[in-house]
Image 1 (cartoon, rainbow, N blue to C red):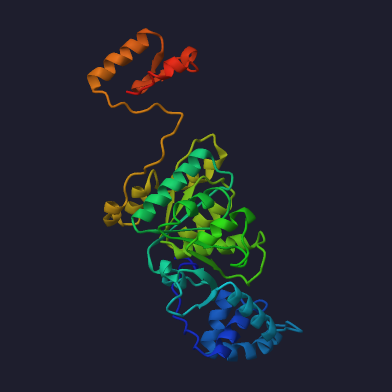
Image 2: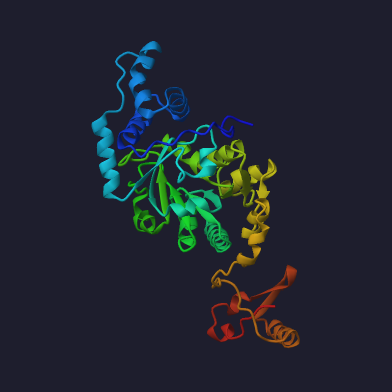
Length: 363
């Protein structure tokens, strides 16, 4: 088992004392204090206040001169900013902190949350993919997310363009979590501001007001996979953030699932590689439930009910015999052509003829 997935000793929750909670926020915001160091300091000193007081001396012994902890005034300003947008603080060790995430050795010591924390008590599936998604990729993302939601599953994604946006949109009524790369109050991309306001829960370990930067996204991705029972990848290039999320999920002991794509489409190259390496192949939401051993949710996961595609023929109410007779007549009239697999299509010469459209049907 890798370090990501290694279970850690339970961290004592901060007391309700405002001073201790402020000290823990200052501790995690101090330079060179990451999640692992934070855990060690709290375990060694017993409180955020004592760990914070010892930090300059620890830094000096390590050869760091002029070390300064995160200031009290900066932490207080961050808290005021959080209060202004109704963000709640979640400290590692508290009951409201998501249990699946808390089990990771590099779990965020602290999260800002805006929205419904009850979503964190339900099964979560992460869904990620490319920003430059194809029309089919977006349809797949919406269908799987919607049907998982109807089965009682909460989706998690990163609020990015493309697949992430489609996942959140399809899950608004059933529950979706957006994990932010910047501050929980900084919506990126800006065009998703209206969507973000409707999302059930937004989470971030970053300070309030922090604009997302490239180096923040891998850190964000470990939270998406850490919250989730498994990750579904829908369209991802070989070198992409979605592939980073999939790798992190595997390291964390999560199930990795992928939707196959055409070998010549670079947007599918990452998914196809994951499948070759043993990821679960996903065609619909039921495949996700099977992979996660949640078959009992089948009764609540109906097959997708996508709106009809205007480019496909309508289903006929005719009997099989009558349909076959009409198709034969249309074929003899040169209005349709047959192809392999029993498919029929209008002939090119009549595709634009309104009279011919009256006979449009499908076997």
